Image (cartoon, rainbow, N blue to C red):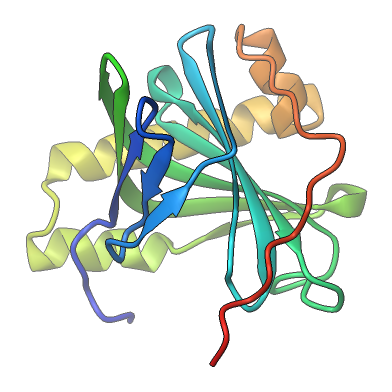
Length: 181
């Protein structure tokens, strides 16, 4: 069992070119794109393991699809990580977008390997009263829809395209320097 914690929230200020991460740090954004009911964000990251982050927020599917650009030798939990998909509630008004993470994640890797992560966090949050049964059911339904679609269409990107959400990714990024200790 994991330690129960409230859902992580994040905000995206398109006009202010900033992303406030779950810890409250305001991060400068390089690029936004809004299309097809989605928001794309690209920004540097001073994280020790990765130096750039790209994300697509897709409210209609409760998804935040991320691509972390890892530093040499820091390929994530397993080498070859491609996409990290958060199941999340997403709302927006004009130029402000907000996410509420629903704990469950799906990670894809080069070569077709994938895994679902943090289901126990969803259960712990439900038991601790951080979310209710309706929100937990929505998280599971969104997760199952993603898995079924990914398997039917041989990948997350392929499935999203069939749903009317074609994603694009940067051809080249510049990694930010890691935060100094």
